[in-house]
Structure formats: structure tokens, C-alpha cells
Length: 132
Image (tube, one colour):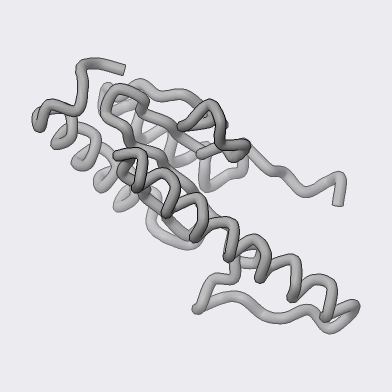
């Protein structure tokens, strides 16, 4: 378990690099809301956009999740708790006026970066804030 990265994974790194190349600046592994003990992979505070890049195994991807063969009860419950926490996080951020973007690690980094940029820029123009 110690070897499993919770941040700076290859999919996150690729998407961050592409978003940065588009001229957008962001916070990495930051809490969107100070009182919420959960971090987003990318946070655009003035635009109120929180981005999560979810691992297929740990977050229960409908396309790629395969239940483990050993200690399946424990790991399946762990993934279910992660999924429940993800939905709760989405709900709390949306209630606070945030836009939540979630991507799976297997999605195209270019497509993810494009959607992030489009969302952040449109929220900035819509009066959600200035530069990051």
C-alpha cells in the first residue's frame, strides 16, 4: 500500500502539463473548500473548478474495474467506500458553487485537457473570477 501513489500519477502529470501549456495555472492536490478534508488533483480557485483524475481500480471504473481474487471482501468494500466518498465530494462542491470535472485514468489526456480549459475559460468569462 505504501508504494501506491495518491498524487503525481502519470495520467495526472500528463494532463497537468497539457493544461499548463494552454496557459492555465492551478493548484495541485489542494482542498477546494478549506473545511472539506478532501483534495482535488487540480484546483482553479477563482473559476471554482475542481478536477479529479480517478484511477480505474481505486474508484471502480465501469469499464476496467476487476474485483480482486485475494481478500476480495476488503478491497471491494474499500473501492465502494471510495466511490461513495467521490459522490459525496461532488455533491458538497456543487452545493458550494463549484464545477466538478472527473476523468478516468484511461481517458485521452488531450481530450481531458481540452475540456478542462474550455470549462475554466467559460466560467471565467461568465463572471466566476479572474486569473488563476
